[in-house]
Length: 160
Image (cartoon, rainbow, N blue to C red):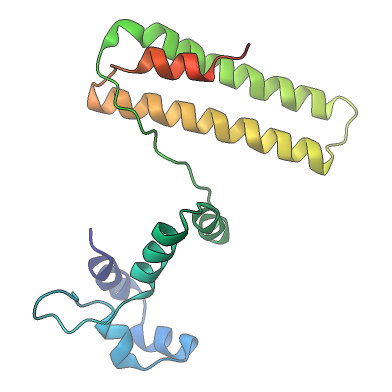
């Protein structure tokens, strides 16, 4: 979906007039954001396209993480590899179980004194992000039926 199409859908559930008022912008500009820019479209570069360009230019995912946190969510990066062979399905599931076990170990250690420090909280968050990433990669492979690089991915996440 293109950004202008998304904005058009958002405008169906929100008031463009209120958006313009809240942002201190003209109503016509708000509507132009929901029009295509290319070809004969008279659209204006909308904030979504600007954010995409900022992320592309900087290559810094903290921008995406901040946006997701602001919306009450979190960002999980999709895996780069494309897996295509089922022979390594068991090691992949074992990797997910191991990541989950590692997360539980960090949580148990942090909670052992009935307090969780900022450093422990950061460690828990890190393990959680690792688990989400590994699991997302696995789920995408399941959806695509594509398991070629599972062995490499599992090996890359193995702890010495």
